[in-house]
Image (cartoon, rainbow, N blue to C red; front, side, top):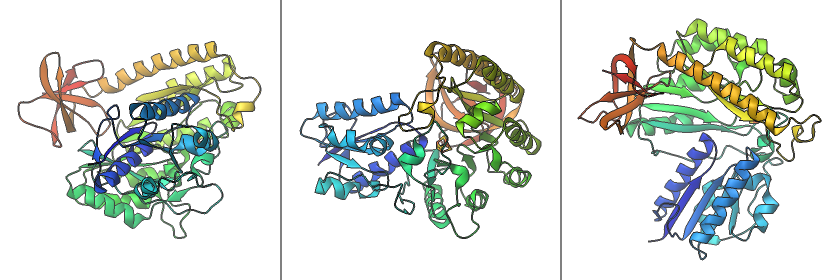
Length: 430
Ligand code: SF4
């Protein structure tokens, strides 16, 4: 039996695609083995979101060839899309597959052809259908419903790497959700590169809200979690409609990047801090104590001490459950990479540390609120903590909770009282 090994880098969309490629290889008769074992085929789904991600992608591709010099090494994903030439010249890589040809993985391996990168920016493409009916986590499944982005934030290479928005047909998403439900999944996470753009490429009026409403009607699915949203999608109508669907988790990731309008403008983000705040206010109007999470970039070109302080104050004012803090790093080929006033690394590190510490405080406060409250938890896995056996899972707000149990609780939703803290970030249910 031929052996294949896969390695994933980057975002949830990539993780989903890697899962789908694994299933294609299994269906074609490959045995899937761990990445550090000898295999006949290695597939690395690369990422290019930062220079560090590029480097890691290259390292994994080289590692694959080193594991077995006679293997076929397949590079796919954003790094090969943005650095096509480099990938084609790299002797460790045998096959380069552009983002829209992953479904041909097996036949491309068989043909062992080179030069497979498609220019997705200049060809009108349909959404690439990859089906997943099982994922590694057996309680929660990620479903990619959209690819590409038309936003062109000045620091981001994604619109060049993944091309323009392509949405997956609503009926295909629903077919997949139904299949997942019949395989026992209770929670689905709708993801995409720019999820809020879902449907902008359709001729009818199908949009993200219509998609969520359709998923909400699928029997067996009990929770719907949403991937990252554009703040301006949260209108009164959107927030109110979401709140009428009890399956929708009150956990919203609204990408912020900066709380200062001048910085946002240079980033080419298409909202102001005030518009962002309005989105949060609406979510808090329609959901009780929702989890609002975000991403922030520090040290964007031209970010002065004053601009950083405006962001810092804004973050405190909004009060987040979780913040992912990124130090700005130059992406070759983007406008921000050639902007004046690049910020010194040391300053970025200081600002990042300050916001990480603020984020930790706010996370603690958010979780603490649930002490004494009755919540539903979808349990996922058995873990040992301080020598005892627990099952851990998440509330709808994505607070991690543990419960002691001899019997399996995997994939069960259990209601109970949160009584206090077990570790820094895990609460306990009695
Ligand atoms: S919205 Fe901006 S940051 Fe997000 S993928 Fe599109 S261009 Fe990149």
